[in-house]
Length: 119
Image 1 (cartoon, rainbow, N blue to C red):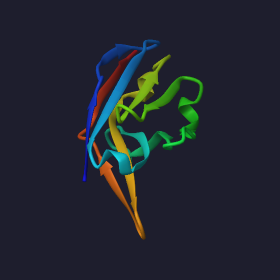
Image 2: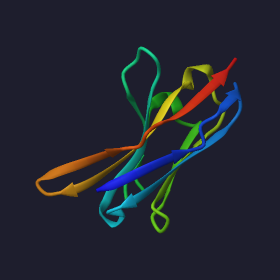
Image 3: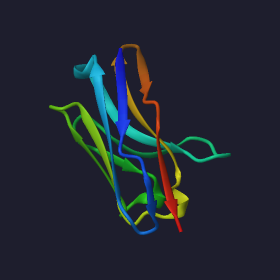
Image 4: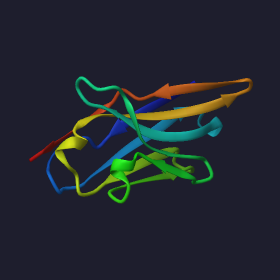
């Protein structure tokens, strides 16, 4: 079992920056991929960025060059540095982690943190 706790969401003006953090507790040594998803009102949840235990990253096209995901395996924490924020980035951001328990993959989600970008 893994528990994820996010922090860092806030109200910021367009062009500003925020850093989201997500700390995992529980079966932390078994975590494989960690990442961030977001959901805006009326929209489906979408992948923003993921990072594997080895450091391989994947980004939503619209955030490439503006957002950077990183991970501190010793602290069991994943970060999302968001620069040049746009009103379209406004959403609830959810931390994600998965654990491989063959033959299945168990998925875990945080409670979400609100990011609001004003124009």
